[in-house]
Image (tube, rainbow, N blue to C red; front, side, top):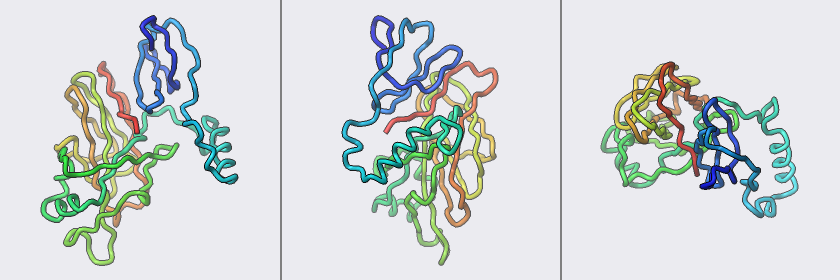
Length: 233
């Protein structure tokens, strides 16, 4: 939005009673109060220039089909639910493996600079496929012949002290922390948040859980503070 109150660019995600939610070219989400908007104009495409140049014919046809059906009723319908779409997964570095061998899994919930987290993204339907995540098979934690564990986290940003409700498709094989504090997992979780950014970190036991992970954020009744899922690359 420019100084004259005009929205010049950004892809519209959805509109509430008070705000217009946009996503910019860097994939960051932000809200603009409707009362401050004087004019809206279409921006340029968020698709990088030259993206289709290196695609095969089959890949190009798949891309065109995906774009043509995106938003329509069907497999590629975009939900209006607040689903976690941008994740981070723990990279299997020597430092991470050494730490997991020496201390408990809870240590990965700490904001440790020695650990490397890489981006991961959910499907259009909001599911994070477990087959795409790195597996950690730590001695004395994974039994012979069993799969190990993988680690994933996402971020929330609270404008003030507030609550956020998370809806999980299943808690099978999961352990979780809000920042460094353990979370008692149920299909519906209400988190008490202080102002600022927070992490929700999951340990996913691959020997127990076979289904993808899907997390939705829902509004808490009578909560006036704004809580947003952190997007981006």
